[in-house]
Image (cartoon, rainbow, N blue to C red):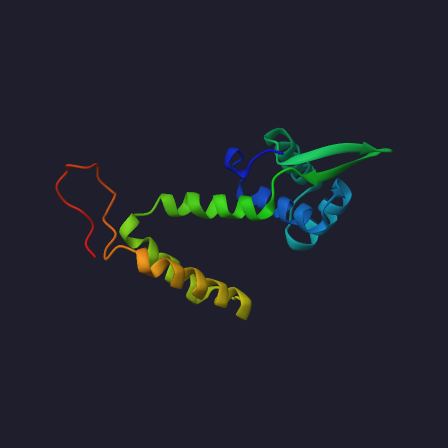
Length: 147
């Protein structure tokens, strides 16, 4: 199974992957029909996206009669975790916590999700540093982000 770390998925490819992850396996006609309900994309565009995902190692393809069946080769949670970590890695370390808090304020979550976050944060609190330092400039350079 390919790792999510090795696969970069574009915004449009995420739409395809979400369908395949949800259905566990599907054919291109189903993907095209479902995406046509959500977006104004042509079948050729969707087939190109599917082909790219196969090339990237995100989807497996098997021939079944006259059609191809697609199954995910990367786990959904792993791909989501990697994508989010990659985004956070682009931000100043001292501002990531605030950005995460802003995202949480705007994200619909179940009570179980909220409780899980509370548990994770409670476990993290005793070993958390008093401050996270700016990592925007190389060590030894003058200046840093303001808090």
